[in-house]
Picture 1 (cartoon, one colour):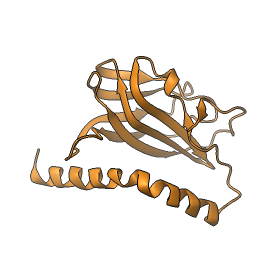
Picture 2: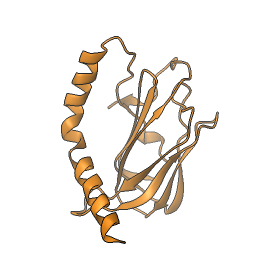
Picture 3: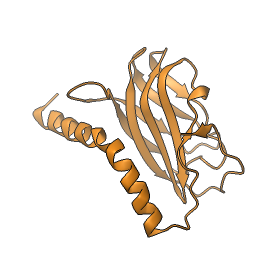
Length: 156
């Protein structure tokens, strides 16, 4: 890995480490800016992850944005892992990719990829998964499908 890539990875890791600390203030700010936007809040769909050892898989829809977060998610599988299909009302209209990281390492480097397909089936995958290793990531993507008729999982 080049010095530039390491510096980039370190900056992203530092940003991700502060993400949880800023989440409450960001949500408060969003509510102040546009309190009328429909928002499902974070939904925990971890129980639908086949082979999940620990951690959480969270989804959220706020207006026309879909957010997906891996929160220290560890899976009993390696390589390419298919995650549960996104339910109706949570399926993006464009492809999105985001690096996932080892959240528990002092210097975090991009390790694998979270890939979301705009397929009608709502499929999404993790690449370069290592069995039992915790992963962290968050991706936001545009969504223009109709609002969900029911909410998946449990409130996070």
